[in-house]
Length: 241
Image 1 (tube, rainbow, N blue to C red):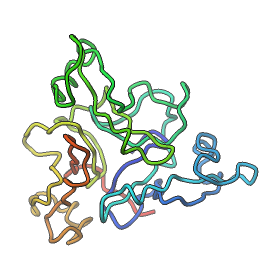
Image 2 (cartoon, helix red, strand yellow):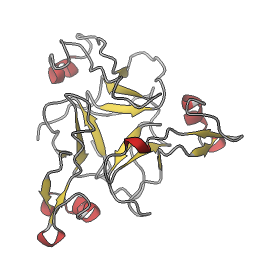
Image 3 (cartoon, rainbow, N blue to C red):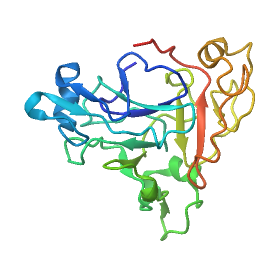
Image 4 (tube, rainbow, N blue to C red):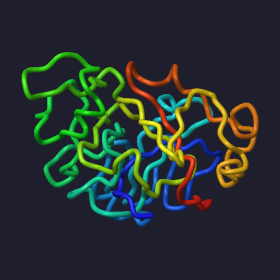
């Protein structure tokens, strides 16, 4: 699966998928990912003179039994972020015109024009407060920013009700409720049950990790106000590193 290099995803596994590294503050050798080295340099530690770089430490920000991982490979961040429409993601790459995808905007309570973001406005509505005519507000997650990171929102991405190829079990943060669709693609992380028979890959990955086979984690307390964590029931099976 091709992702934007340096993108950060939340996984409920007890391992790092191949091509990804846990964001636990570790130091990596630049040869492990020369492009990522050039993007992060010493933002999170390491020594460029020694050809090393650090990853952000997001263990404290991750919900229990989950981990944030960074993609070591993929498309250069200049361009488009391949994510779900409205998805809020932690972004760790320093902000320059050449390192921020053109479809990501900062979650700082800013307003977007409705006429250029009609479906996103339909999904979010006025849940984050009033805005001037012809505009709608995004969530303000600045009090949630981990050190030297920002929350960015994908303003142009995959329809959350349409097919996409995330990892099985991948967790996304959305500032709205995903409309019910059949067959169900995303399930709210509220500690509820999913069909064991229809989702054997997810059962294999999670086991009884969240209180029994066929149960998703309860991340309601970890989600920012008026936002929700959703888990992908279908998708690409992750390989172990």
